[in-house]
Amino acid sequence: MDSSWQEWTAADAAEWIVAPAADDDKYSRGVLGVVAGSPEYPGAAVLAVEAAHRAGLGMVRYTGPRAVRTAVLARRPETVTSPGRVQAWLVGSGIDPGRRSFMVLGDLQGALASRQPVVLDAGALDLVGTHTAPTVITPHVRELAALLASREIETSVAQVREAPAEWALRAAGELGVAVLLKGAVTHICDPDGDRYTVTARTHWLASAGTGDVLGGILGALVATHHQRLTTDAEALSALAATAAWVHGEAARRATEAVDGGPVTALDIASAVPRVIGALLAY
Ligand SMILES: NC(=O)C1=CN([C@@H]2O[C@H](COP(=O)(O)OP(=O)(O)OC[C@H]3O[C@@H](n4cnc5c(N)ncnc54)[C@H](O)[C@@H]3O)[C@@H](O)[C@H]2O)[C@@H](O)CC1
Ligand SMILES: Nc1ncnc2c1ncn2[C@@H]1O[C@H](COP(=O)(O)OP(=O)(O)O)[C@@H](O)[C@H]1O
Image (cartoon, rainbow, N blue to C red; front, side):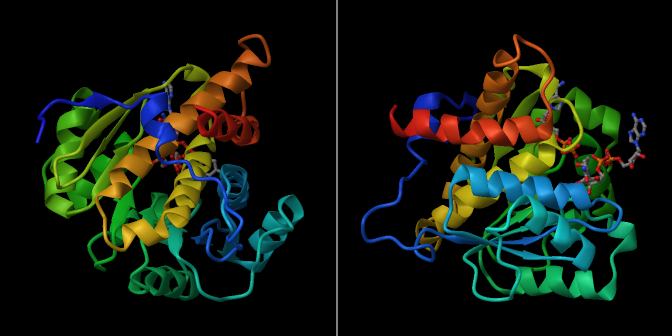
C-alpha cells in the first residue's frame, strides 16, 4: 500500500455520490439512525440531522431526549422518531461522555450492537472497540489525544496537533477502525493502509457546530452505501474523505455567497445540496 497521503479531489468524491433510481424507495436509499444531542447540547443533534437530510438519504431516525427531539422536529419534520430498522448509525455528537444517562448509554450500546456501520463522534468515542461493526471515528485533536490516553497510549494534545498524520495512523492501527481526524487539514486513514487528506478551503469552518454537520454528511453517505459496506468495509475511509470534501466545498460556497464573509454551521448544511448536485454532474 502507498505510504504517502493522497489529497482527496472532486473526482474522487464524485465516485461516492449516488442519485436515487426509479426502483428506489426511502428504505433502499438508506436509513440513518442518529443518537445525538443532550440537554447540554441540543443544537448538535439539530445540526447533524439537518446535514444528513441535506446530503440526501432515504430517512433519518432520531433517538434522544424529548426536548431535543422537539428541536430536531421543529427544524426537520421529515425526521422519524419512532424506533425501527436502520442501515447505519451516527452516534455521540452533542453528548457529554461524563453525563450520559442510563437511557442514553443503552441507546448508544443498542446502536453499536446492531452490527450496522457506525460513525462514532464526540461523546461516544470512548465506546470504540466495544463492538465489531465497521466503524469510523471522527475526533478533533483534543478528543483523539484523550481517547488514546484513555487506552494507555502516551500522548498529549500538543503532540497530536504537531503530528496529526502519525497519530491518526496510530489510532487506526491500535483501535482497528477508520479514523477521520478533524482540523484545517483533515486526515482520514484505516487499518488497511488507506490514507487521505482533505485540506479546508476556508478557515471560517473553525466555528461551533461545523463538526456536527460533518457527522451528519458522513452518516448520510454511510447509510446510502450500506449495501456495499456489507462486503467492503474498507469503503468507510473513502466515504469519510468524501464527507470531508463535501463539507469543505459547502463551506467554500457558503463564504463565497457572502463575499468571503463568515459562515455558520447551518449555512454549511444549506450549501450541501448544491455540492452534491455538482458532484453528480461531474
Ligand atoms: N450547538 C451545539 O450543540 C454544539 C455542540 N457541540 C458538542 O459539544 C461537545 C464538546 O465538544 P468540544 O469540541 O467543545 O469538545 P472539546 O474536547 O474541544 O472541549 C471540551 C471542553 O473543554 C473546554 N475547552 C477546550 N478548549 C478550550 C479553549 N481553547 N477555550 C475555552 N474552553 C475550552 C470547553 O469548555 C469544552 O466544553 C461535543 O459533544 C460536541 O458535539 C459542539 O459541536 C459545538 C456546537
Ligand atoms: N482552522 C481551521 N481551518 C479550517 N477548518 C477547520 C479549522 N479548524 C477546524 N476546522 C474544521 O471545522 C470542523 C470543526 O469540527 P469540531 O472540532 O468537531 O467542532 P464542533 O465540535 O464545534 O462541531 C471540522 O470539520 C474541522 O476539520
